[in-house]
Image (tube, rainbow, N blue to C red; front, side, top):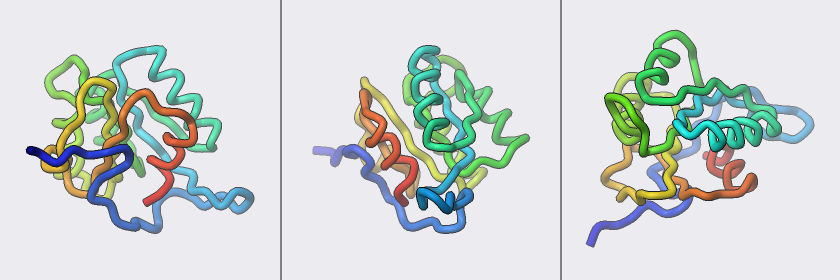
Length: 142
């Protein structure tokens, strides 16, 4: 039986030095690449992240996300698994780990539950649906 990744579970470690520390709330302000093909879900997550003072760049598939990663520095990639295009979110997460090893990765899905072996090192999995506090914990606690 394969071990499944649970909510926020991964092979994480403390990666200090990412983002800017907000002196009022004490939370890190990150530049987050959000990759989600469902427009309403993308807008909802984007709004939640912006309300937490994060800067969000959005892409609707992995191919567009790779273009963003080639041209911009991001602190974290938050990607859905099931997406159209040349690769799914797990493929994108693996590519990010290989090409941009310092970028944090959170993989999310409401349909799949990848095993820890399927996630890149130091990546996390978050099951959909989730609430704002779960999202905040997934992207902000390393």
